[in-house]
Amino acid sequence: MIDEHTPAPDFSGTDQHEITHTLAQYRGHWVVLYFYPQDDTPGCTTEACCIRDAYPEFRSRDIVVLGVSTDDLESHRAFSQKYSLPFPIIADPGKEIVQRYGVWRKKTAHGKEYMGTVRTTFLIDPAGLIAHIYENVVPERHAELLLSDIPDKE
Image (cartoon, rainbow, N blue to C red; front, side, top):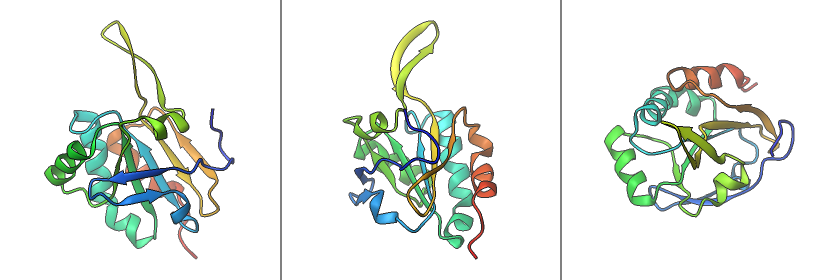
């Protein structure tokens, strides 16, 4: 289990443009690392589009946004193109990153249990520590909440 105020686990993953990202490369920046269940589903699309709409504010404040799901690169490319997503979406089909962050868990829907990604966001401070963990994310308000929790650059 990962706790707030502890070092964020490093990872390496490839985004929809086939660019590799590691958490270590963003040391010195605030990082929004958000995990979502599946490309092009209602809640995930709402969350991604709200972050997209607020992305100019994230960029102006030098905040890195990284999305992660277990979908493959092809799915991420289509999702990113369809909704003009300007930030990296990392493919994790091997479930290494979701397991490292503890968001690959047992879920229940329609009376059936299955394993899946629990929508969770980790706000990582410039020193690489987890500043806040957001569970039970409300997709429509998530970007606004994140921006209100990240201090302005001095």
